[in-house]
Length: 379
Image 1: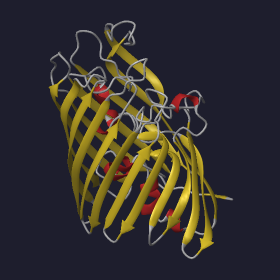
Image 2: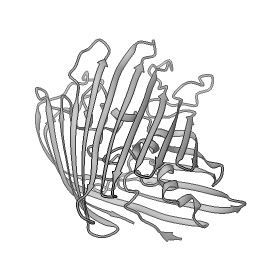
Image 3: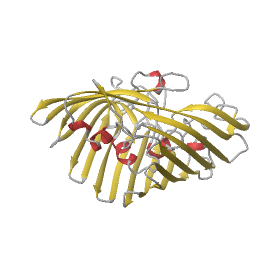
Image 4: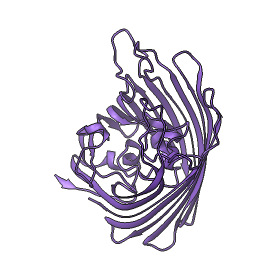
């Protein structure tokens, strides 16, 4: 048993797609231990003194400044193990068990689950593809992570607004195949427990989800297209809604030092009665630039064009994020990460899109700024 690490696949590290991209599924038989610890000191302005909830009608309190020690700035702190066994004839058995924790308080993340980030087992065949079963990232999370300027970093990434609440899904079957420059992936969940229970006798549709993605990667140019649908339980009787999203994205690399990327995501969420809860168009663009061998700069812009939000009207939220990352070694880096949002809290919290990332905008304010200085170590 030995340890492994890697900053190259840093933020989507050890999703199935990242593992395949780094060649992990073709490794020799064995078990690898890995993880990462990430902490920072953060400042946020206009932060609400009241946590919005169903009970208080999702209202917020006065805005004030917040200073805190945070866990997970560029990567969620995690520990895990992954294994592969050569079964002969090009067939491998594989598994991943990965848990998230808060380095600030030592508590488990993802609702207290031991392996809340990933827990799956499966088979891999180089010519056919990879089949996995368990709690894992959905197909278009793997695909879109490579087209996110911040690679789905933890702190200032409107990931829920962009790809949905079920980006990490329970009870999921998944297939991923690599065919030359094309990567195809599809998934089905029998019941994701994010909003409900799933796998309820006589209610097959309840909390189910499915999606697919196709990615082309050849030379400096890459592109992807994907679709995802989540059918969450929305009433005590078990009635479900339908949250549908589709996206396209592309990127282009210049001389290995700079990478430009942009994407568009269509979204339509309907309630249990079929009425439109949310209809929006989400756009993003950004760039990565290696200023030196040790310094990487990242700039990202996100904009959500809200076509319909029930019977309410609201201004379209947008956000700009900037990261400066300095690698002290192959395993350790220090960073500055900042973000400014308008018409919503950071990560589009308190907007029509996402209410779960914890940056609640204070009453009477229309913008929020956050900045953090941190250190990360991968092992």
